[in-house]
Image 1 (spheres, rainbow, N blue to C red):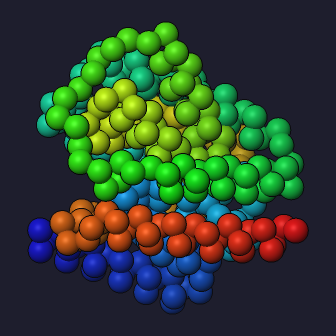
Image 2 (image 1 turned 120 degrees about the vertical axis):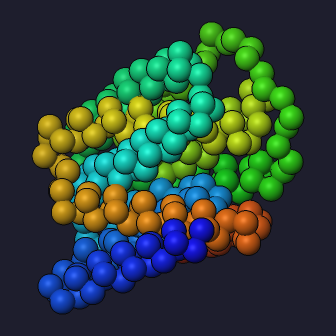
Length: 270
């Protein structure tokens, strides 16, 4: 654990110094945003609620922000899925089905996003952020006791609901993990299993969205790579701190940051 902490710390300091010496202040800010949002996301979920609006506040267009966030989130989700597969905690058949549905949803959501103007996307972003914020506030699952059993009850609405969540994630993103976790917990999955299945869903939706954004030219590789590295470091730091921080504290921090960012976005647009 100490070795993991030292590697993350040294890598963080090295990249920050590199950005400082090369005067890439915007990349340095994005790198720090990625670390912080991934750190918060590891503790309580909802890291995208911080990443996307913060990127737009640095002057990056919303479509580029979404495309960059899809890449970094997809990389993080892939690492999670790979780990869970090695630990044999995922059912391969179920995983493939979820990835396929999420892949289609992510592509569909990204296609819609690329045909909207910046103003329309910004207004939509505020509305969706507020909705995601309300869902997060009303979600007691963050601090509730995990259920002790899983439900495999089949529902004809399941593919449609998963497709909708994936489309939202592919077209926008912030709060999609929250929606997914709530969905799986409502199907009486344990909190841990809901998080695991959510990582699979996010991997599929981000992959589908990434293909669309890459073809349209919205993806900017310097931003994407920096955000991906920052997200990996932030998640590792979150795993180190996780046993020492209560979910109630993490959730309060997330809600506070989100509210401030929504206010800033509204003042900027209107």
